[in-house]
Length: 520
Ligand code: TYD
Ligand code: MG
Image (cartoon, rainbow, N blue to C red; front, side):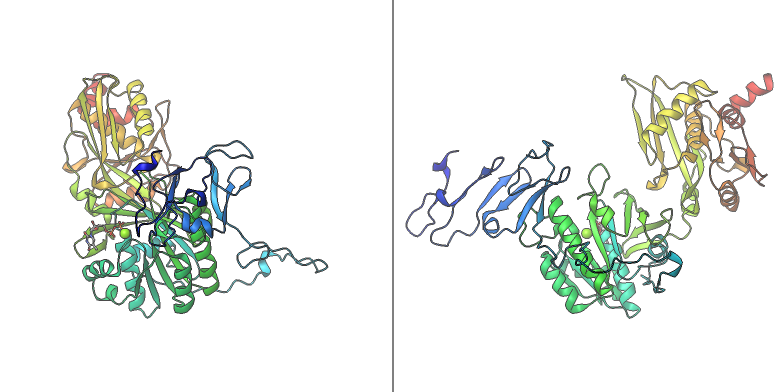
């Protein structure tokens, strides 16, 4: 390190005093100066997990705990001295024994052991859920926010998390609830600009721009809101911890502290969280265990449709999905998404309508496929809205059981409208769209309408039963798409054209397949 490149102390300038600074292994000193005249305020070291301020290191009341073996170390190191695992040390606050936040306190010696009670006798007071005024959000939550619960709302940047939470708080405030919006990412003025687009109710929400956990806890104690949004958990920092905001230790500490206060005050807290590039919620996995409910807000930023789904819900089903559309005045709930997606469906080759289930709700979406001769090896397999591995399986089964071989073709599959379908029931629609795209023949539904289908494709080419066939068929019939192609059901369903195998399905819908059948 070239110390001469550092600011040279002159008259009135801070002097470097290296003796007052110590470094632990894995840390690299940058522009470090312990000011002797008090004028240089910022001092720091860069570690592999962010910039640490030396000021706070001096009064640090945290240490580093290995997430694998529990070893406690005073400084951060890349490798745990206890178990030898890499990157497992996470900053944690030192806790006094029996301190305010210690959980699972031991009963004093001599006290009678607590008595377990049969669940039937446990007193469970009926709680009134908070109606957010955003019906789709309430449905995904299982009927509104539960007082005292902690909800984690994840989503990639710009998807509309702040908009959704702003609307929900506006709705609650309009129905006379005490609410609070805490923004760590934007200034109050920026929050106001958004609220202006969302309308009068959103403007009535009290807002605060704050990132200090201690300050936020104090505000919660003072204001005692019924519902509070913290946007986002990755911006908070706890006093006494040196990790950068968003680091595992900081996020966990902040969420734990907020949870404790929220449960005590009965405040429903929505923590907004970021999503990493690979789709996981940023921050520690432990956050997902800590909260009562994990919601994921998804969609393509360029498209206007957004889906909200629950990954975990202690107070309701995880199968519900809410569909929204981003408009200039905020998010608009799409009460009948099938109508939107089917309206866009075309009768071109490579298009097929899938009767999907989104939770307990049937949803019609258009699956589009394009098959083109490839110029590269291995050929491209590009998917949006379905699982890539599922596509590979469908292509392989198609080649063996009555469909075309796509080994030398680029394959693109897209679920129109930016919707994501994560169920095996999508297999048949993908297979038929591919077969249709390969032959360049549109799929034949009845009465000039697009073909609707559903069903899981097995490795031996059979079509397998998927849940709620009757609801899927009923939804398709509602839009005049029928008969619907699907696997045989246990009981006859009106409007279902059942086919036992993928081979039979391909033969039933393509003209060339029908010629072959007639010739046979
Ligand atoms: P935002 O809620 O800030 O996203 P996040 O908090 O998830 O990062 O909003 C995202 C986008 O939505 C932003 O690019 C602007 C757009 N938007 C609208 O189209 N209409 C609106 O009424 C609002 C408030 C935002
Ligand atoms: Mg935001």
